[in-house]
Length: 109
Length: 120
Image (cartoon, rainbow over all chains, first blue to last red; front, side, top):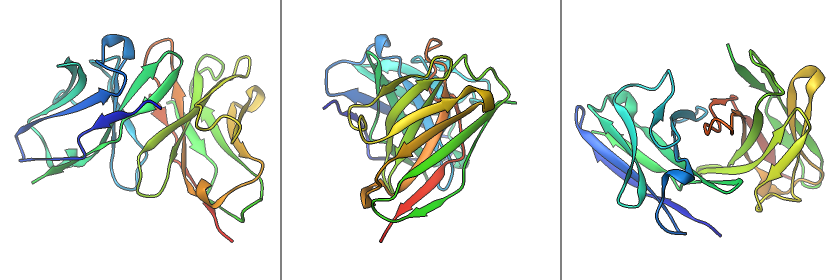
């Protein structure tokens, strides 16, 4: 069974920068996995931030960016705001099937 | 405005059947796949499957194949997720989402979620 692994938790100061990563148990993540990133705050439905590695939706704040980094998908938050405190999930494509990552809890402190 | 509005919370007993809904508006229902996602209490997101409303073609995660049925009614632009015999382990929040798969942006717009509680 394919496992997509993320850091369990990360802490960042307001105004700082943090990078979340998304690794596949099958090997290096490439653009062919079409990485997506989602944000979920407590009691809310998830919201999509990034699709197809680095593309932003119209509602995605400019401080969020997606990339590939060292064989993983990555989500970078630059100039972090208090409202960015949330759980973040990646999603990878495996030839017709999709697997969500384990999630990263980002704390802004 | 694209909207996906899900049916309300359900409390069921083990062995009972259930069908929850996801009513869509604001876009062409038959153009995009609809996906379903499970989130068990305090846990992460799990992809369950997709349906393409135009021809009702489905694709299931191996973890959910045979456990649930996804369907759609084009006439009322609504997708469904159903169980024939619920188990306590089905207790979870279930989300539907629009999935423009060809555009490589699955789950771009989400419903608000339906909480299903299965308890004797």
